[in-house]
Image (cartoon, rainbow, N blue to C red; front, side, top):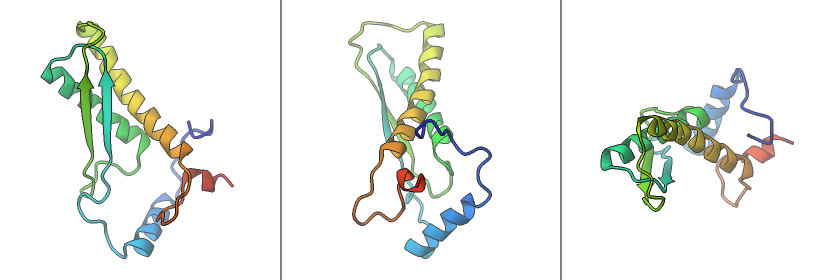
Length: 135
């Protein structure tokens, strides 16, 4: 992802200072609870029960951790909706369900990463887009 560059590893030493600088410049203080909300949808054409759809959403939510830093903080209001159309007619056995849930986290992380990489600047943006950091 990120144009083949991958995530910075290890995380740059100044990452927290950069985040705080933008926060203070644009907001002047700590973000309010819910101010860093990410909302997503994960969908499948498999047949899922309500409990299985909930598990799919939980698994997809793990993709946030792989793609967004920081995440799961007190100021986050993150949410994933799971949809199952059932149009394939496939009812998942235990092994297939595990594969689906594992893929959900990876798919969500890729979708977020690809969205960040593809973003273009817009008037009034408070933060720079990833492409502007590539020079």
